[in-house]
Length: 173
Image (cartoon, helix red, strand yellow):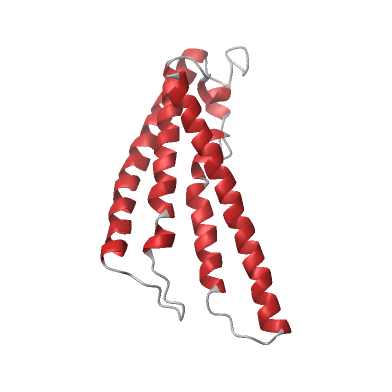
């Protein structure tokens, strides 16, 4: 179990680095676009697509990293004021519901990606990018998110991590 949890956490960290690199790529491409357009008076064809796909890709691919570090918006008032037993069941319920939602979402985005791939979808821009390439970030990111939820639930159930990251001695009971 420890090996699985460590492997998923490593994948989530790698995905976080990939998301950061995608954001850096978007910044570099925007700078290139500004220079090409306003300094050299050239037309820009591919830059807007790359920036858009990079930011969307970073959002999906980085989602498991955000979950790993509990970086999402969190309202801790109920867990902080609950006892350890209620906190455990509340964490298990919320993680299980989130896992169920993300699993359904994963199936749907896989179907959507496959439709784009098999239908040879292309962007409506001049660049005519093959959409299955940037859309691959959706099943990849949501798949990693599902794995991270499974690892989090396994760590919670086996007592490797406390519910909501709150130790029994913390919080107001």
